[in-house]
Amino acid sequence: MLLIPHARRLGLQFLTKQEGTLIIEMPYNPELEIIPDSGIMANGAITALLDTALGAAVYEQFEVYRRIVTLDLRVDYFEKPSPFSSVIIKARCLKMKDHIVFVQGDVYCKDSELQIAHGIAVFSYADVEKIS
Amino acid sequence: MIFDFLTTLKDSQEFDQSLDISPYAKMMGFRLRRQDEQLTTVMKFHSDLIGSPFPPALHGGTVAALMEMAALTQLFWDKNFGIIPKAIDITVDYLRAGQPEDAFARARVFRRGRRFATLHAKAWQSDPKKPIASAMLHFQLQD
Image 1 (spheres, each protein chain N blue to C red):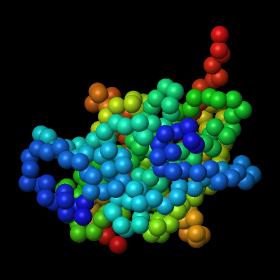
Image 2: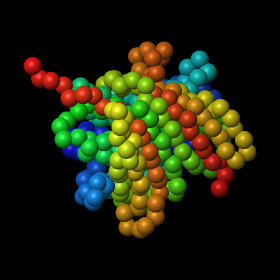
Image 3: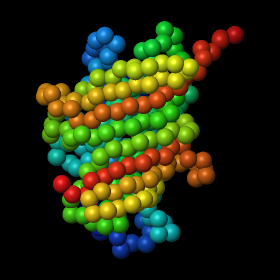
Image 4: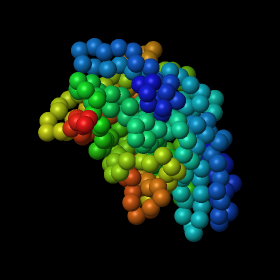
């Protein structure tokens, strides 16, 4: 996570891995508000959190580093995040076949059970490059 | 707020305005431009937008956020609703890797009814004929 400059800028923190599900936190940060002092983090930041976590769920499938590309990403916004609340994402791989990886993630307010968003994405990946 | 601010721009035929009054827009380096009667949202490149360092490429989430901003500003530009349209969903197609340089996005209101709006957005960099991503977005226009 720390190697990805934008993830670092968003303050993303890897929390844990439970049975193949990655849990990542985006702490509340006033810089992520669209409307100042609203306490509500921008949808764009939620989307970037999803994109990062879903990519991480893809990397999780490999034993060696491979380059990945995102083919598509779909985000459903269920609720606004609660004001001043950190959010967490639970991301997991659904299926990997023929160089295509399907992943999904659920985003929650950290301090409540409130689910605020859901995302699915499809990635592809390169074969491991031989170093000659 | 940000939308009152947009209203003040409506009389200008051409402008290139930072959106720094919004903390998130400031962090992302978003600007709003109007030229030839068209509204373009700009994401000024800076190193915090990188998603993959080797080779450097824009983070996919930043490109999605840029198109989302373009859609929201376009929706407001066409008609002031008095409330902030609520995003329902976004579907992004990633077409090319984003280069470490400025990116642009424009959105078209595909259909706007009384309660919902559907927009299509496109993002590009140095060559407008080579989009790096496109998106379809739905907004709810009333509570």
